[in-house]
Length: 172
Image (tube, rainbow, N blue to C red; front, side, top):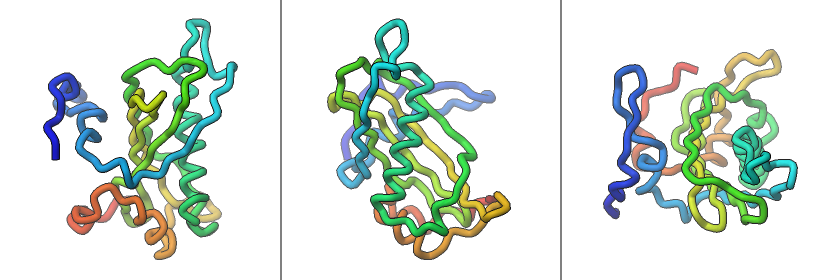
């Protein structure tokens, strides 16, 4: 493992607690195993300053998660979910004409939830970092346990499989 660069170690304060930014948290992960979704950027995705509008990053993350579920062959019964939390750190602007790829790993599998960590790459340079918690739901939109087939499919890109057994079950 390599050392986290000094410029990445910056931390933020939330509720009085210091936390590393997502870039620092994700710096040491093996992204070669990640799911990669190439995004078709459109002129309408940009704002008056000529760069990607901040709200569009969330749309790109959503598109990448849909492609991830399809590409990993997550069964239909495991495909109904809601976003419970989204954390997004913007690092560098993205301009029209750049090649945008969203790389994603599964950080954690809970009882009925899973956490997707992503980095949005522009021309191969990490430009944004995200963590999304999704909760599997039933037809009444109530939390539903993940099926074994869904766990197996998502487990294919688990960021740190050796640490998964130490996580406590999610309250979802």
